[in-house]
Amino acid sequence: MRIAVGGFQHETNTFAPSKATFEDFERADAWPPLTRGQGMAQVVSGINLPVAGALEYIQDQGHEILPLVWASAPPSAHVTEDAFERIVAMLLEDLKKAGRLDGVYLDLHGAMVTEHLEDGEGAILKRVRDLLGPDVPLAVSLDLHANVTPEMVDLADILEIYRTYPHVDMAATGARAAERLEALLNTEERWHKAFLQLPFLIPLTGGCTFIDPSKSLYEKIPHLIDENKLISFSFACGFSPADIYHVGASVVAYGKDSARVWKVAEEFRDAVIAREAEFAGDLFAAPDAVSKAREISAAASRPVVLADTQDNPGAGGNGDTTGLLKELVAQHAERAVVGVLCDPASAAGAHDAGVGADIRLSLGGKSGWPGVTPLEGTFKVLALSDGKTVGTGPFYKGANIDLGKTALLEISGVKVIVGSRKIQAADQSMFRTVGIEPSSMGILALKSSVHFRADFQPIAEKVLVAASPGPNPVDYEALAYRRVRPGIRLMPGSSRTS
Ligand SMILES: [Zn+2]
Figure 1 (cartoon, rainbow, N blue to C red):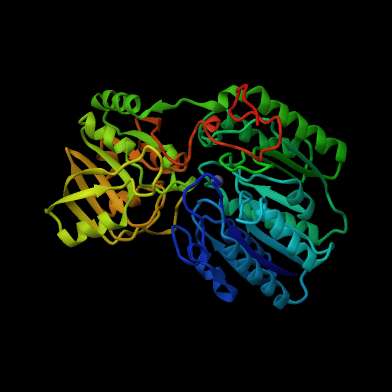
Figure 2: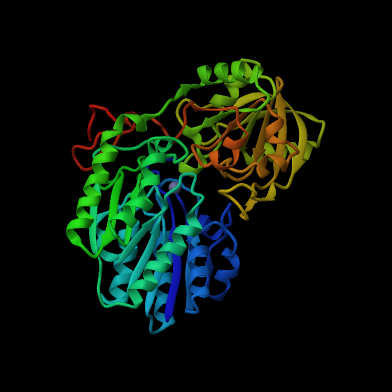
């Protein structure tokens, strides 16, 4: 069989400060740079990415792979029209060049919003479908944070969605989508689909599958598929900070018996609604988070982790807010380190000054978010590095992480790792680039919402989710939604609707 494989990933926080340009897709971050054609397999090989899992599966089954374009950029505000149109043009050109195809697999996110389109993936699939015609099977994997739309469900023969957050099953999901695609290639029948949307937005932290309610809901999925002889069943938590009509969580199911497919989907939706209040989770204001962390860490041998969720670069933050750092300094926290604050100018200044130097800096707070100002002061340069490392934890495993020029600085006894590229602090290797062994610290303040849990929860005494001002607000009632479909509760259990 001749199977084309490509991808185009972006998670769009429409409230975030900066857009994703073509250059952002061209550049490597924690994931590879834009890749096209025969080199793709080598570029993504061994990385926890859907496309890598799909390629491996298709190759193992002995099918012929026709590589298309694959590109991803860090989460941010809208994808520019220029970036979207150029990359989709590549995708369509590569599909045309591939000639006769038996099937197509695409690695998409599901929460892409562009300057000119609310439903990026719906538009990609429409153009791909127009080119392929109605009969060529099209399988798509999506992120657990996909804002799935009816158009995506209509246009793809199958959508497969991650079941873990931290996303340790990205490659596995790609492989599962490829396996379903292969099943479609061997049959004329097409599966019945059920698609249901949930009536409330889920905060990022509420989707974490390490803790309930998401843990037990996601654990049910394989059993639901087996017991009901479904082809596929997925639950997406949605990506809530997106002001679009179809924002939010959804259930997508496939099977041969239409009534059964709908029944299972409806029952699961109702099970999610029954646990609505639990999705809100515990959240601490920065002063409370720091004092609680100090208290716990004083009596513990393992670090307390503070998740600086509202500045998570994995959700559109720029990784440069200073609220939590200032609070650690104000409370004279001991054995505390903040990672990774993105401030290329300060990192360069530290490199120019050298290890051991004391330098005046206006650190962070440069992306212009309301309530965020730089931390002014004299910092000691403790260590320097080129910021290059390979991920060792379950989420970033094998990824070539490049933080750019990186420095370990200290102010009033609090350490801060300053990098030059925004990457969420979801892997211990990022700390080791400047000689910090995370398990030896008392408090680890991480710019991440949930992905850090894969690598840091096992070494943590306690995880506290902290709120200091940033572009990824936990309280969606504070955001000015205008386009969301009517009646959606902006927070779990809230009486405020869109
Ligand atoms: Zn995600």
